[in-house]
Image (cartoon, rainbow, N blue to C red; front, top):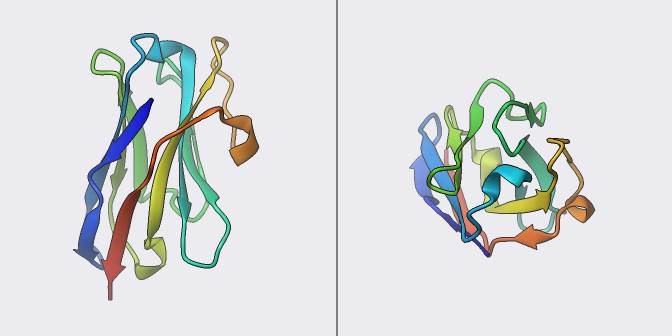
Length: 124
């Protein structure tokens, strides 16, 4: 089970940190990602991190502004979002896939476990 938190309303240029808490104590074996879905659009990849945190990958649209990280002691993955833009407005979802070899994935169909989402709204 994955539970997101940390969404909210922020002005353009501001920051938010999202959290994704997992119930599993073996989170180091799971690649975890953040996706987002804006109204009327398909769910899109944002960032992903390997189970150990060694490897990360970002969508071009967020590179340099967002940082994904994890604390396996707390079974939590974070998404630090800086320099937010109105186009970042979306429901943000975390997702996980069992990946003991640390492979990264960018497709929604690759992930087996999903959270319920948290709304991020960026005003101009």
